[in-house]
Amino acid sequence: MKKKWIAVLLTLAMTGSMAACGSGGGDAQGSDGKEEAKEQTVELWTCWTDGADTAKAGEEQIKKFEEETGIKVNQTNFTYDMLHEKILTAAAGGNVPDLIWGLPEYIGEFYNMGILEDLTERFNKWEDKDALSESVVKAMTIDDKIVGIPYEMTVRAYLTHTEDLKAAGIDTPKTWEDLLANEGYYEKNGKYLTELACTGVRSAQELLVYLAQYDLEIASAQEDGKYKNTWKDNKEESEKAAKVFRMYQDMVDKKIIDENCKNWGWEETDENFATGIASTYVTGNWLAERETSNPDTMGDIAVSAIPYPSDGHEATYMECKPLFILADSKNKDAAFELATAMCSKEWQEAGFPDRSPRSDVSTDSKWSKDFQALADSGVTFPPVTLGGITQAMQDAIAKVLQEGESPEAAAEWLSDAVNASLSDSGELSE
Image 1: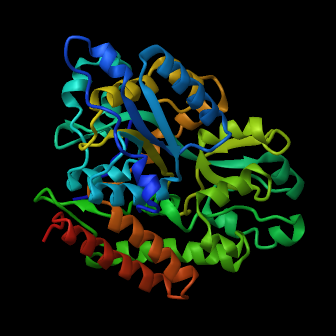
Image 2 (image 1 turned 180 degrees about the horizontal axis):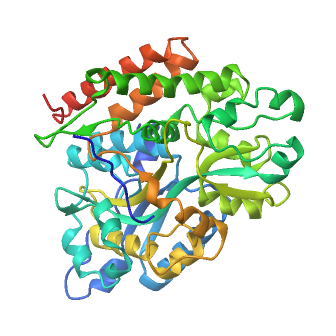
């Protein structure tokens, strides 16, 4: 049974690093809760871009939160990939932080590991909960339990440097075929037309979109309530999946993208676009903050739908990011207070004005309205344990771009790998 999850809205590496996770006191209890809260330290792990507007706003808001509540916040920043690996190690050692930024891909995995606190009761008592739409709350929910507080919501769009395209004498590409028709772009213009993220968390998100443009799901809900990748059971689906991987291969072969993209994640691709090294890229509206840090190269940005195959249709990735409180946290009440502060109107207007999950925070800029206009074609991952699946998606890209396997073989391999991952987590429909 096919189904799209379309949203309406938008290591323990060193002993010392793990020691930083130790909680500084228990939940506020007793006759003087405020006094006890002052002694607490919330260990917060974030994934913002150091020096960018969101980080600056976050640092200022954390100081204000500490002054107003007496709760100390010990904030450490990672990439999402680093955070994911460190949480797995910390959870195994029983020494976790209190509050972490997350991705929607982590919900099923962390929930099935039993490391997430059930926030339902606290959420229902939260006076500001009505600022979140039903669909946003649903994105934070699994097994009828609210396990996250949203801090950011985005969709992806095709961003273009309009001056680059004007100088090259081409229109904004609307289809894969439009992109691939510009085989000589690099030689003529000294830069690549676009990019693909082929490693890290972004690679699976991008691949999910290109598959969805052919109505392909990485795992489809079945009648028994479980999931399965059905490509090998359906010749048409298998052929379409191969077309997606062939597009990746053609992008490299025709020099539409830099061949080094095969080793790049979002850090490199976002940076290349923001600094004008690439003319176009599929990314999120967090790049609005790069207008401040890179004014010379970010002053000509236009927002369009992601190019799609001429025999397919538009699709984009919708992402509602959760703040998680860890089940083994010793400071759950203080962590919830910080989580809801991060989702407050004041904090959201300061740090996420164009990409807030709150219905009362938005702007009139292209980063808000032009992105929101694409939300109807949004897709997201199925609510299953995704760690093995997203890694398999990344590995399938590598099989084509690094190991030289055929698109057909990569598609077949990925179908098997997805089902193997579902089997391992007990979520495979037989």
